[in-house]
Image (cartoon, rainbow, N blue to C red):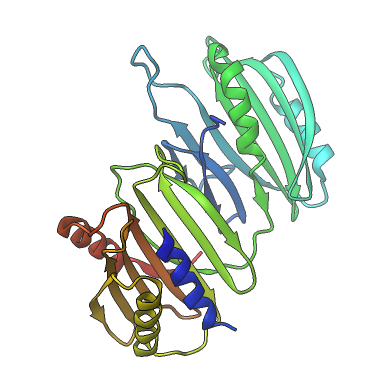
Length: 318
């Protein structure tokens, strides 16, 4: 990953547990974000009267049965209510099927009070017993209710995950930002290894979920420079070639494509790793994404696959 840091330094010059992984989801219609566990599937329901978002665990248990973990988010317009009154209303509305209140408490999440309740209750058919964790937040005259459900046998294990998910919930999201949208291969699950964001840039590095920063074979690094100077791609190319020649005399720099809007090049024969880099100009940001692998040279198939992936990436607002 050494050339990730090299590329980062060059771009800067232009700007004078065994915890389950959670991936951020942002809803711009109802102005919230939340972490979704890996391998879970979600459905946005913007036209639904109350329940706006549904998420289900699609994995199987040891017996081959689907795990019945799920959560949904309801959004209710209610000016002047407040979180305490909203919590009382929720507890009253769900009391009809409740068998037992198990625990209750509060968190402060992103500066906002969140009240929660764990219970055991009868399902819709009044035959099945379920366990749930309810979380209530009030923001901008809206009640946000997160309802997480599972079976009694799984609740002791799932409760910790439900509470972790709830504590990623945020409202009052900042204005949309330009990002480089990349469709990663679906045959691997990815995890964020590093991410930072400030007024000048946004950095992110992801690894396959079964690898670590000390034991890795592949890494994807992305850099977005905010409000960059209007340098030409020819200037960027010259700077990269000069810096790489200084860093590693035996390195092989290969320019694959150059246009007024993007550069595509690879670096090989560094003695430790090789990389494929794609630099593209957006509307308000300069984006670079880098594939690093621990091989002396980039295999032709790898170069072809990731060239196609990178060139399909688009700067979008989100």
